[in-house]
Structures are given as structure tokens and as C-alpha cells.
Amino acid sequence: MSVQKEIKRITTHNLQAMKTQGEKISMLTAYDYSMARILDESGIDILLVGDSASNVMAGHETTLPITLNEMIYHAASVVRAVKRALVVVDLPFGSYQGSSRVALESTIRIMKESGAHAVKLEGGAEVADSVKRILSAGVPVMGHLGLTPQSIYKFGTYTVRAKEEAEAEKLFEDAHLLQELGCFAIVLEKIPATLTKRVSESLVIPTIGIGGGRDADGQVLVTHDMLGITKEFQPRFLRRYLNLFDTIKEAAEEYIKDVKSRDFPSEKEQY
Ligand code: KIV
Image 1 (cartoon, rainbow, N blue to C red):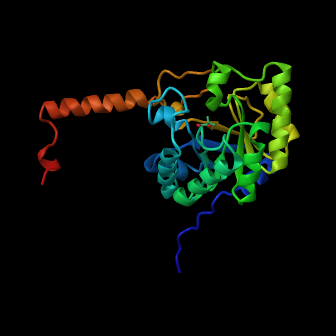
Image 2 (image 1 turned 180 degrees about the horizontal axis):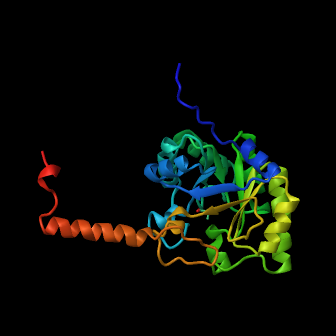
Image 3 (image 1 turned 90 degrees about the vertical axis):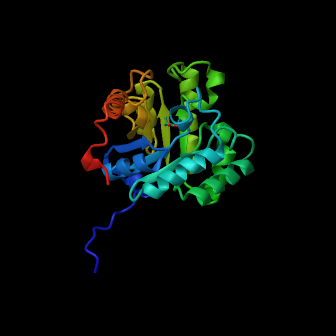
């Protein structure tokens, strides 16, 4: 008999129970096997294969260029590493806005080709048909309201959303619509903390905040930002836990020095 401890996978039901029991939910982004393995072993609840891969992995200015095929590649790499976390994949720009049929086809490709557990899409009433259709195929859906980066050219800036009453009311209604449709959680990005509190307290399903203050039911950060791999991006909501940009650069500089000076490889480092 195996004495290895069985690792229990996080499900959407566990997340709901966490909200009910007042336990905060932790979520980080992951785009590749090696990082996903470390983050999964850390005990993170959700790994988001975010379309922020477009920025941090591919160097694009916005999230718009990343393709469905590229998202599937990232998602499959993450899934291969993960034993415990729930893996959620962003539907990229253009893969769900056209029609609910397109949304379902994109979702089916993600689920079949990557082995992920759920999808996330941006928007409220505008994407209701797509949310409904994806859910009817048995795929869990996470919503995303507030600052929705795929609409950056409509907003014009990455500043705080829903400060005005009309936009705040629309967000509140959209959150309730997404819950009624059957979403298992909603990301609230860059909105006033008071609105996060109001929305989170009024919903049964959990909210996950990024720049939404303390009262969301969970928090998400882009891993490359919180590890300090990205350098220029410094919004107020970001807490940096490491400065890996400089750490990695220093290690590379030392390696270059060792190669140039013939210090590396030593006799012990050869066959
Ligand atoms: O793509 C992403 O990383 C996201 C998070 C910011 C929530 O959507």
C-alpha cells in the first residue's frame, strides 16, 4: 500500500466553502510548467493562466494580441505541473465576443487540449449568452468586472474603474447577473474598495480582487509583478515580495564573469 499522502484537488465547491467559512482565497497567474510547479507546491488555491501572458511572456503592450493557440500552449504547460490548484484559463480577446457559439468552441478547445478546469472571460450583460452556453456544456466560468484589459482601447487608460455611480451600479448588476447565470467566482479589478465590499457582501459566490481592496473574498496578483521580474509596472495595489529582476541579472553577470575569466567550468564541473 502506498504511504504517499494523497493531494486533494481544489474544486469550485471548495472555493465556495472558503467564502462561507470566511477563509480568503489565494490566486496567482502562471504560464509555464516550472513556475506552476513551484506555485502549486506553495499551496496556492487557484492558478490563473491569464492573458497577461501577452504582456509578461510575449512582451506585447496589451492583452489583445495573444491567440487561442498560444493560451492553450501556456495552459497545457501549467496543467502538466499542477497537482492541487484549480487551473483557470482566460478566454483571449476575439475568442468569445463574436457569438456564444464561438465562445463555446474556444472553451471546448481549451478544455480538451490543455486539461484545464475552468475558463474566465471579461464583461457582464454583454457576454451573458456566452457565459450561459459555456456553463450549459458543464464548464465552470469565472467572471471579470471593473478594469477589463481587453477593453483598454474603449477605456483609454488603466485607471480605477466604477468611481462614478452609474458605472458602479452597472458593475453591481453585472455581478449579480453573472452569479444568477452560474459563474463560480468573479474577479474585481481596480475598483474602489467600498464597491468591492458592497459587491462581495451581497454575493453568495466569491469575489477575487486585484486592486479592489481588502474586502474581496480572495486576492490575485500577476506572479511576475509580485516576484519583481517586471520592473516598470508599479501600481499602488501591487505588493512586491522579491526583486527577481535584479537577483537574476546579478546571477547572470556573475556567470558571464566566470565564463570570461575561465573560472567556469572548474575541474570538478567537467567529465
Ligand atoms: O490576465 C490576468 O493576469 C488577469 C488578472 C489580472 C486577473 O486577468
